[in-house]
Amino acid sequence: GAVVSQHPSRVICKSGTSVKIECRSLDFQATTMFWYRQFPKQSLMLMATSNEGSKATYEQGVEKDKFLINHASLTLSTLTVTSAHPEDSSFYICSASGQGGNYEQYFGPGTRLTVT
Amino acid sequence: QKEVEQNSGPLSVPEGAIASLNCTYSDRGSQSFFWYRQYSGKSPELIMFIYSNGDKEDGRFTAQLNKASQYVSLLIRDSQPSDSATYLCAGRVGGNNRLAFGKGNQVVVIP
Image (cartoon, rainbow over all chains, first blue to last red; front, side):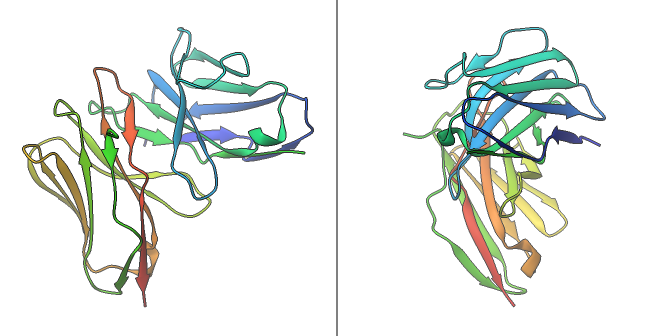
């Protein structure tokens, strides 16, 4: 159990375009989903926390108008990177929580975004 | 002070030996702690969680929690080359379900 999927796994887009990444909990209801970004050889950086049906809570320094998060159901959250630039190229990983009572997070496989 | 700290550098262990990883946390009220394994280029995978003082064993892995000293450790017994990865320590902080992650420790198991 506790499987989280992400789509797409890899995407290349041109500067100025928008990219949508989907995160799904496949076998449990995720009350909370999280979006992280990770640059090469660096640690995970939490971008935002979203609860189903509520607005996402963004971490300090993360532009909410640039990184749009929607958590429309207990199994789906989306992250849209708007007007992407090369510096947005990174590994984006979602996680979902809700399976257990200890708040453990289960991670999706990640999406590698390259902006040219 | 960071919420969760992992300060050790890369750890090299011979195959079959015990790998020992430590992390400390600053919030005495933190309740739950987690160890994740992350292979290069992949996302983190949950290995264990622990919330009670003492030891918790799962196969070759043992997590230890000492709330008085505010540290969490992970022991990997009979280390295998497939254990070579970065290990992330995380703790639930504040009153919400956000996890604070340490920067990770790289483990290299030498055949």
